[in-house]
Image (cartoon, rainbow, N blue to C red):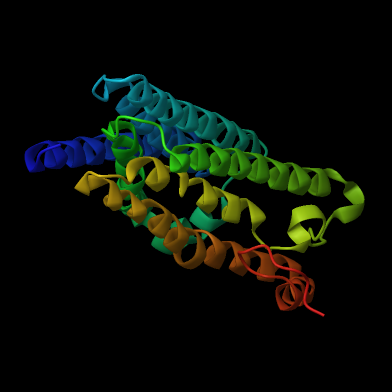
Length: 267
């Protein structure tokens, strides 16, 4: 991959994500439910990865296998997470994280929301680019790290699905109304779904890194996802909402449970 080809790839990924988040803005305007934003974002990123895998240069059986991995990773991740968010969105009137922002923006909310979603598209560029670079890796043979990437993605998707299922089951029990979910994986981490989401993005650098110089750029994907989940749009607004709705029960949960990485309970 030449510098020109890399820059063109970067531009195409950026434009595709910006287009996807424009559709997310339209979905929000038509439904009034900002929960659809994350649904559209998930499918947009997944589509970038799937397209990158399909359009990657053909070559040896190893190259085809690596492309197939990226295509499968993108599709399975997007379908599982996107459908999960869609199901959750159908059961709510609005996403509390976005709702707080919209309330503060007042009459300027449509413009501010569009700007925010375009910023999300730009921040997501490392994710889409990592998928494309993983599919384009010209290494002629499959390596141990390629199979490790497959194992990482299986653990990540399964772990996130289990965490989401445990939370959904807990919330559906009327006796748990107003309580904090601290069962299963949620005993080890306050956000196990976020942890496994981050873990999955480590698979792409494993596929991308090799003899060529471009693969190392894929490391920006897990770094970006960690930053977003832990410091920006994941844990901070969600925990603020949980403190407002669960109060001391959630403060106690915070005191005894790791925020992100699954760790043993504090003594």
